[in-house]
Image 1 (cartoon, rainbow, N blue to C red):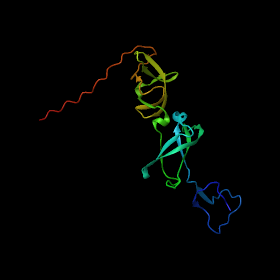
Image 2: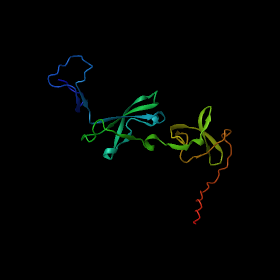
Image 3: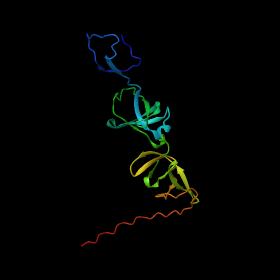
Image 4: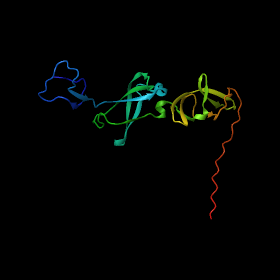
Length: 203
């Protein structure tokens, strides 16, 4: 008799009645048992967002084919960044008492701004490449400049996520000059409204 350490459902069965089972034959899997409650969900988080993931944190899991969004909790993490992908492996546990979600189902993990902390997206022409790393110029209330060290997330081509260093309320300088320094006084230009295109004359 073989007893599993947890209740579950046998999915693949590789043996039949009458088959010879050889002791210590580790190359042969007799059957596979799936745990259905709780379900384990694994996904990877970019290195820039890894410090925001905490054990016990609630995260949304989207099952698009069922049109449902369910909550799961962070059970554990690998506590290390995978070198080739620069990501953190995260394990979620999700309650599934009625076997509503079958093991192996496709799902998407949705990380909101609340679960990842404050994330700002800026255009690439706001970045300053300095020897100490990436910076942006922020205009303070007295119209002086403060150079901020930033931590970037995902690169979208023309824009990039800023996960640390600025907030949505900061005024960031566009196309800063290489000579920009902290304490320099600048003048904030008024926003100009885009005028509509003149209508084409009718013949």
